[in-house]
Length: 362
Image (cartoon, rainbow, N blue to C red; front, top):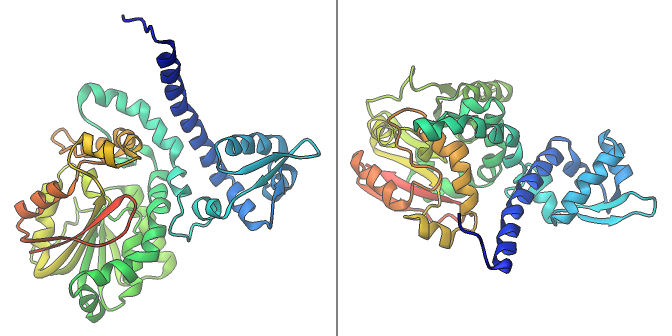
């Protein structure tokens, strides 16, 4: 084993390693802040709060709240000062309120930490995957995974899917307004389906997903909202139609998770009318590791989350495609679409930090 001789290089490498541990621990504290309502309580108050006031507002113990705040202050997520009473004086900046407290804001990000404990428990599952090559689907992470996905992605879509994205698609708004059959494949907890069904009451929408937790959650939400023109189905038992009856199909942040994305694309083509539209939304990936690392400052996060979730799902069957989080770059998406029988493929001018939007047509 080689012994390092450059002490500065060794110290820098140690710092880099333990910085990743610091990030992981701080992520756990963000999870706690979200689940315990600490960010929301800070956002609801005018001006700084003492740790005692924050503890009282949330029904928590001051000493625990103070130590949590010290972590958040050291990480730069909160502004924290020592209080005269020995406690802490805590402030949440406006940007922090948008990202960590306001679930209706398009920049809301705390939802990504919702199922963090379940995600990290996947470390125990995937150890065997490294030996067998076979991963685990999202239901292996429990019901909270579906809720976490819902809270992670839906705020942006509520703000932009109907008003900004659909009008970029040729004729889709007009067809859905007039009344048509549509589907969302890989619908998760049903957010897009319910949003579209409410916006276009003359059309019918079916959400398809193999996650039983997600389908159950979606149906509960549909019933709570009283949406009558939407339904949810497991495509293994209730597959997409094959007679070209659908005018519109969407796949939102899910194709790279699938064991057979090529087969799904073929099923979408069979379900779509010859004048139909497939809205393909997936990660803003580039072709190859070097390009992703050079252009994406979150590449390490995405490759790691792929091992724990996306790649595991995509390899949850022995013959899975295994695309992974950054595996569906535009060139590959075009190839999949063309092989499935689509002849038109256009990238849409949608400004999103990590998603790419494509219009795919027969």
